[in-house]
Length: 538
Image 1: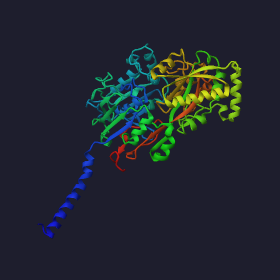
Image 2: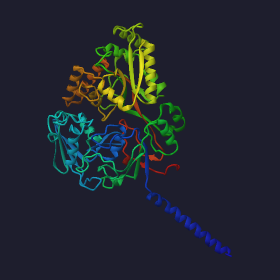
Image 3: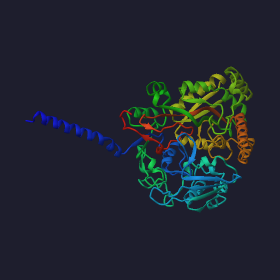
Image 4: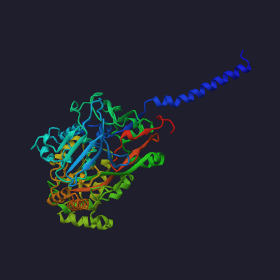
């Protein structure tokens, strides 16, 4: 039997052991891999940086690749793979200096030639990139994209491993921001195929692809060859496809997600009341609108009719009642917050609601429609509860205000896109544009006659002339004035009906630190950190 003294000694030993264990716990925790779990919307269609166009693919690609420039957590343009650049006085040449010692995820040296290869690839028609036009300001890009010159003629050159020179056809202040886009990523000479097997894609970003199980999850791990890996703290990032927002909310509440891709509008009141501190709603460069096929009846040659339909929509009702305040009413195409730009708004947007309706009815009648002979129109949208709810409300507004008979057509995503592109059966249809750069030209270019996403078929010589003027000047004030004149001309023609401006909407767990809302809604995992385990108090 132990004496009292022995028991005291044993107790002291126990206390000492416990103290030692407590000292070890932080060290043990520090060695455990940290995992960030992100809801990511639709399954990425590709992880080829020059071919992928979806928002969900872009989220992943910004972790896998890094451009010459980047975007800070608060949305500002910053140096990335390039440590500096110099713009020639006439605005027609930019010289980039790459950081020393850059490497690919497989350890190979990364040079300026790899960035030149990426830019040649994105404009090469053989790549079939949806972003070829975006880089049309680079000398030779348009001729290459149209098949009139080989990609080797693009105005990019690498005089040495750390220097890249880009020559432009015209001044393009937006190019620096565009070079942060995944489409401007460098290309490894051995990685031209869109490989998805573990380790099969060679990138230069803060993470590399570990595993991709389609419709299940996409797993990334830290890239130790990344130039700034020492400042990366999250070891593993898991992107989870989340097409149904209600299911995503359930997963978030069950601590299966740290960040959601969005939130269901129908649950907005409950989320605000119960998860308010975790809800992030911010201005976002995205426009939701209805396109009108102006190449065929009933909208061909009928700008007055098109304006009437726009005037008949009560955007405040849609935003406040249908979307529960998770958006902003839109009367322009270019969103507020766009750098160095003032969105243009038609004069009627400031009229009292009754005056808007009176003018809408006058224009409707002037187009030849009456109660006895109403406009009959199909309104198409792709499968989504929110798209359906908005379409139902708009159809009711057109019916009540003007007497329009609307037939709603719900189509699967790929069929919907194909019908919009062909313009054979479409009349009115849901559309959206999310900015690839914080610049008004990113929106304006969508409605030029030869843009591949101009699904309305809009073709206005005055609009084209204003945009040509904007691209021919380097002086910011003159450029802004021309872009604003173009938007005014387009809104008067009304080939589209603006409805609302997106807001970025995320739920973010308290354990996630370093999250900043920004106008592009771009978030790099390398800029975030985790300060506790899932389900543990922070």
